[in-house]
Image (cartoon, rainbow, N blue to C red; front, side, top):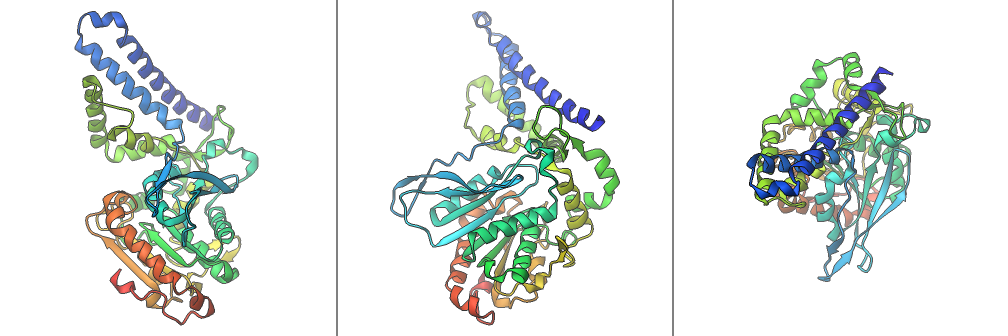
Length: 430
């Protein structure tokens, strides 16, 4: 019960701060106070507005907010988000664009389950929509999943990806961003051995910890310093009485957010101070740069305890993917069995989360692939976020990924007949 009480204590603190912000704004905005200008009251109203919004966003799942997309015909087409596979811990959703021609590229974008919702990839989705039939993994907040639905660990996550790939079929291009990269690689290898006809055409791994020890970072060092017992004791709590998942053991999103914020505390503190000053001057707005970023950044979700702990223990500490020792549902996955899926890795030169070297390790594990079906790219000057969003992604990485898909799509028929033919003639250039 003490873990459940701790969970409710965090939620109570969040709720109290939201209430304090709303109260401060309401009090300082009392009309009678406007008879005489009082800078302190103006600051209090601005502080209250920023504070209320900040703590309120922590429990809200953001909307995708992608209403339309401009297609090759020069027209804006409405975008509809449809659920095509519904599962307890995550859905496969499809961004349907009515009224346009079916695009030749069918893409599965595997979103991270690392504390934020899949909407963190909103800009990535928006950039791919004009050129692709796009499907995205939409993971659910563990606090909203009843205990009766059972467990969900890295093996279950991998099997979800296997099912999604089977559903979409072999003419699919898969892109995995950050955390899911090693498990997506394992899911592809699982299909290569047990259901070869369901393998995707290409697999693009972006900034993922395939081999966390290849280039150590603060994240990997943390995994080494802390024992599993310490992690379970300090990080795992039971969902409180407010949510459907009451009693489920989770790694709380609010705890994860605290870690995120503490890594760059000075920068976040300055950002909120500047936003309060903008509110005082009447320069802030619902959709300004600060609110666009923090509305997404602050929206966090709980992960099941077994998923979080098994990720740390098996991916980071034991390095099961890096050593090709990963087991799924009693079956030892052999990444060397991948022979018909072209694989590309993307890394950021300034990535301080999954540093260069961690992701490209996937190519060495793909011993069954010829070099002509392997490609890699390191984006100069790009950090972790920049390799799947922002200017680096839009101007440099996205065109390379689409070219990689196109090149291997043209080889589809011959690749399915034999693995000895060249599948990516421009791999060295990318």
